[in-house]
Amino acid sequence: MNLNKLIRSKQRKLMVIILCIVAVFVGVLYFLNRHAAEMSGSKSETAEAAQPEPDLTGGTVTNTFDGSGQNSLLVDAQRREKQTRENLVTMQKDFKTLQDQVNVVLSNNQTLQQSVRELLEKLAQQNTQPQFPAAPEVGSRTEYSLGPLPVLPGQIDNTLLDDLSIKNKNPDTSFWIPTGAFSDAIVIEGADTNASVRGENNLVPMQFKLKGLVHLPGNQRTDRLDNCFVTAAAYGDISSERALPQLQRLSCIIDGKHIDQPVKGHVAFYGKNGIRGVPVMRNGKILGLAFTAGALGGLGQSVSQVGQTVAGIGATASISGGEVARSAVGSGVGKAADKLADYYIERAEQYHPIIPVGAANRVEVVFIEGFRAKFIEDEEARKAEKPPTQTAKDSARTQGNTGLPPDLIGRLGDATRLSMDDFVVPVSGKGRQSSEPTSQGVSP
Image (tube, rainbow, N blue to C red):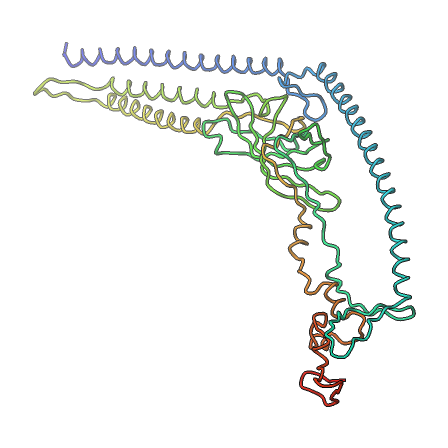
């Protein structure tokens, strides 16, 4: 028997044995993968049956998301009743304080009315009895203060007022929210937060609606931020299984005025930072396919090595067409399986764990940095205000009751600092006076 034929027959037998082993191995991997998929599916169905999704639209939601809301309803009702009682006591105290303030204002008003009546009586007496300064003696130096003449009964007062000076300025209606203030809120827009290693760089938007009173330091409360909207950006923390939102902006409409400004804070759920959720991983199937493809690639490389003939030094060996075909099939299958495994690995890297947060959850919004809530309309009006060019006091002092035009009074200057010598020059001698005009004024 030829040696080559014997070797060829042994190689064929070995090839058949290897193919049988490969077929058995592939079959075992297939059944194991299928069994594992069925087991994971049954486990997920069992977990879903054991932990149904909470009713986020109307039912109560607990921090474990197990759907049991029996104790939560009772606790919620007790909390609301306690909050109602506290609000009633606070309203009674505020009402009593306002009543005391009203009484004080009424008493002050009566006192002011009495003082105004007394001042009006004194002013009427002074106007009915005008006083004129006595004529100075010749040669004596007398100073006069020329102010506005009093208005006698029957005369018309021509005081000039500037409406810009008496125009009511816009009051400061802004209010301060101190550090640590918190309020109940409802999740308006949920999110599937990214819980991967780079989740902090891939934030997702969320939106909350403030409800009820804002709790301030000193056991104080305010309802100025009721029904306001707060936007936030959130990411997931896989270790604590919580979504961590960070507040960004606050928007309100109060009495027709708008507030839109950045804020800093976080969201708490049942006394802890972040919103509790159930982590979700969706890359298990992709990893199984990548493993199968890698195993097939290894088997293909092994099959391609079966048909190779090893010869000694100086010897020659002929390769048949069957060996070439086996080597080609094994190499092709191995390379294709390797490429498929790389593809599945890249696809699996795109999957990352998420922590879903649904809408309608009740949370607490905490402001970690105080801010002043400013109305946009008031800020624009304050910037548009122009300073008055002339006050009513200056206008009245300029015009007065003299009846002279303002330009003439401006040429004459301020007569309140002038003396009689600025108008009359006495003549030295024995009671003799000159009737000729001088450069400074006229002599009597």
